[in-house]
Length: 506
Ligand code: ADP
Image 1 (spheres, rainbow, N blue to C red):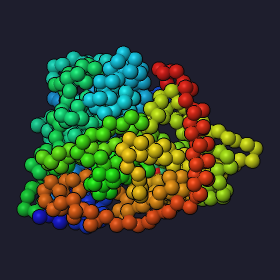
Image 2: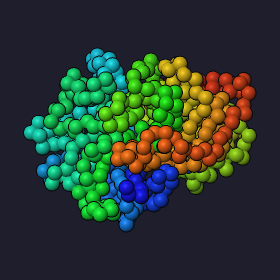
Image 3: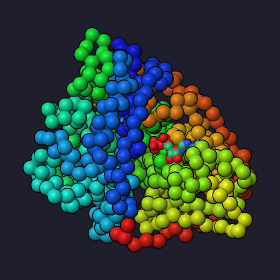
Image 4: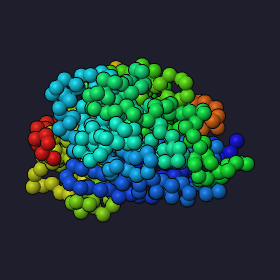
């Protein structure tokens, strides 16, 4: 068996190729950014060809001379690509998960009664976030896409499919597949059958011919071999078996070894994504959460999760840096916020693209409330960090109501967890301890774990559990009264952001 396992983490802003050893430690990595294309307010696109080039370049750099037993891929979810199977060329830029151009499509689903069907079968509320509406938009608005799709020339995929198709040869026999976790974000898959559903396809007008085959997140037989050598393989030709694919948040759930019912993780990046393992039966949310597939290993039953997705958390810190210029680096949000003992009455709801879980209100827009003459940039920085935590509390409250399972400890990961004050505030605002693992790259690690499990590099999930080590734990310090009062004010602030814009106005 080769010494290492590789992972590709194709994220919203960059692509990382990483190499892990048997203890789950990072051995090598390379990261490359790609362009954010913003044609107009609310629209966010990526160039799929650029993503593929960056992915290949990152792999070649990170995997050079390294012997890999298997390769897993994890990716930004919901982002939608349509390409020509003969030329390998994208028919349009990818429409990114944050893009809100499909707000009219999403709203129409609820107005004409298709919303109930979609909720019941896909576990998702109608929203701009998911791939189905984005694909419908491409079919209806880009010349030639509908015809190419009906003729069988146009292929659809989320970014996992696009990268896997290219990695396995592209126009020269590339494999057109996706995994259950990515498929569970399209609004086109039935959560129970784990297959594309005719009624859902009809709701979005999507021809079945353009869809990838849905496979497990970890496949012992693999999806295929890389068509070109990306690293070394012992005695082989350098072509690595592709044995795992998972959406980024599901991969982080695996990387955080949340394999038991009731185990949860919260990833603090551009947005926040809290996933709670609910076992082999999908739990329907009545409090604004999503039901999604957490992972499926080989022929074992799929494991489901309840998910709270929050659109803007770390990106609110970027906004302080890039738009308001009150900090020069994201890390300065901490030093600035530490100049004041509390938020000075200021609450900031960063509903820049509406509110995701648990509200699902695309008519909301951001607000800073409670300002007085006394308040400073430091109070705003503090309110921004608190907003990250209060939005997570909203999701935790919904999860408790839906699942009946109280949270004992929150496992955290992602870029924002470098902010000690923010993590302390999270423990205070939730009233439960927050724990961060040693390996912060849980997303790539989860893809590597799934890929390695598929080929027997790791025997079972117990072996993975033994790799998990805590690096830090933050304990709650606020009194219950302080906690309740802060949360009450937060809810009042959220109320003030609702019903702000008209749907379709951007
Ligand atoms: P993603 O995978 O979504 O790109 P990362 O996990 O790399 O995100 O985290 C990046 C996000 O974390 C950025 O939005 C950035 O503003 C935020 N961030 C990074 N360091 C800090 C910090 N010290 N304090 C607050 N926010 C931070």
